[in-house]
Picture 1 (tube, rainbow, N blue to C red):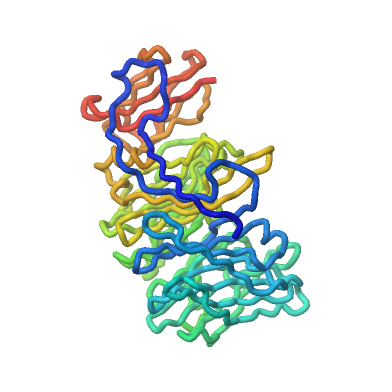
Picture 2 (picture 1 turned 180 degrees about the vertical axis):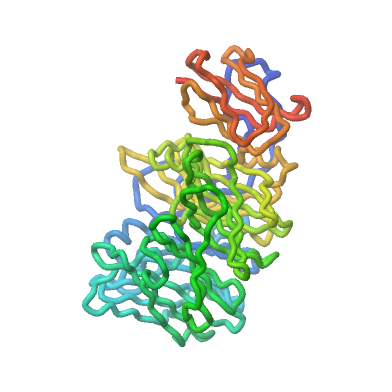
Length: 528
């Protein structure tokens, strides 16, 4: 194995800074036992790198099965570049499984599903020569040992060398009879083409190939790489979103019948004055109301980039959009390709997951951006938003969020850290109780490192911005001597404060409710 996993159970205290302030300025919040987080490393260090790119699944017994891709081995064309780890509900690693097949192939994606209480493993392999690709199936026994390999599909590319592109992000779609449908996308190698091909394959419950079709992107009203993931909504039709990079930036909902025939392409337009909306990251059916939701982004003249959620009514060929920020904000608040997801809670709440602020992520400023978790209901009404950061030395990139059978929420993805200007990757998983995302559980949210507001840009200049979904809260800003330099009520998602007359240095901000009796969020902001 590449490395051994360690569990980091860190007690997260609400107050993350200490300044020379009167004690009355620091609220006292009881400490609550936090959930666990799991990472490969205790401290940043050079070494083999791994990533969690695809889905985590949970067994009925409460074990989490996690697929990994070892970046170094993958880049070097080795066949032993994929692992599976099994974690129990307490975050303890129970099993580590190395996938090895053939040195002439590279494993570049793994996805998992559960059918008849069996964990199935599907590995996509592409030959070193780039002339063909395989889909291999294996499974896990009850003790999580690995079963036999079976080749279930081969895609031959003929004289044209191909490269895998964004394949196997989602689990196979399983209908009521146990038939699975998988979708893979390939492009020319070594230079990507502008008319990539989609392979759509259906297998019976015994994993025998019963149907296979190939579509080119031009057939799917698409001339851009931003085709997103596909889900089976009702076991009678398949849905795929495609994007035509052409004014007015139409998106299309492509509908396929059970024989994988394209039956119609529905243009999705918004009635809001936006330049572009991106149905990005995740399409998923809510198991509690049967509706299809997506998380995405919009761009328009006033807002540089803004996170939104979409609800699709397939019968009416309609899309409903909820924007999470309704005020001007020149900060970049957008979706990163494939790094967003949705989580449906039994109480009707829906959690989204993406990055805020992506510009700081790209610039590698770990202390300047957060994982962003908006909360909304099935009526597309925003209920709140949370921010999470693992710490200043790390740069987290969460890609999946899951509701667990023990009423928890797991976020998984990767952390980045920089050593000698080299950016390295490691897997990271964190678990919260679902109750931490409730509107009345502020102390519990704080105890698990979740924040209800952020100050930005930080460090900043003449303007200090506070972003929060809280209302009826009082914002107070203090200088280093504990003197109030600004105070006002919060009425919008974004509150901008004129700091042009403030001296350079560190300031403390607090959000309070109940006539300033309860502090619900606080932090420090630095003026350059």
